[in-house]
Amino acid sequence: MTLQEIKQVLATEGLFPNKKLGQNFLYDQNLCRWIASQAAIDSQETVWEIGPGLGALTHYLLELAHRVEVVEVDRGFVRYLKKRWGNHEKFSLHEGDALEFVPHFLPALVSCVMGNLPYSIATPLLAVFLEKKLPPQRMIFTVQYEMAERLLAQPGSRYYGAISVMVNTVYEIKLLKKIAPNVFYPKPEVFSAVLRLQRKDKVEPYSWRKFFFPWLREAFQHKRKQLANNLSEQFPLKKSWIKFFENQGWNPRLRAEELNFDQWKMLFNYYNNF
Image (tube, rainbow, N blue to C red; front, side):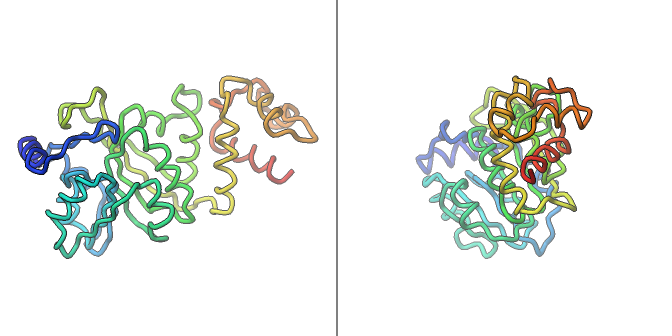
């Protein structure tokens, strides 16, 4: 949809962008088409879209996919989407909060998920996908650039945190494009980024991930403190965490933000099997 079309639809339908829900509509049609193309959608594939809004991306997904299932929480946009595509044979609409819908109603096997994620739900929603027994095969998300930096962060970066490690547990992540604010309406104050998350060939089993992720979140608390001391307080063991660090040849003064995924996995397995 062009900028003029978006403004016209909003006025005609009596709709307003909800700042609380992070509603900024992408109106660059070439960019929408390009984002859809990055998913490499098979013509027999079902694609899930989170927060379609007015359907700028949905339009191109319907051209590519066998079926498009969308999840929208805003009742005004639900009404508009029903009016626009309610009778389309490829289109299905689910009204509700994605944070509640995904863990309870999303099918067990999902190949492709797309969406423009507001900053406020990006981390918890990604965590929900990561915690599924079988996470989606690939996900293409537009997020605030700061969120992209957190997901792409490497050990030692100030953006590196629990979500960085969690995503790396399951996905290969790639920055596809940095997007300027002036292609959105209303214009946000920050840049955005398009990310592709491709599930790794070998993923840690659900039985492991469902305990690792909560443990990791706790372990990353007070991440500026020395990790061995922090772990000793949060997860006391009969033997010293510091001694474990020394046995691995690690600096006992390491902080949480300095450990890579393999080291975090080693720490958790040591704790879990103690």
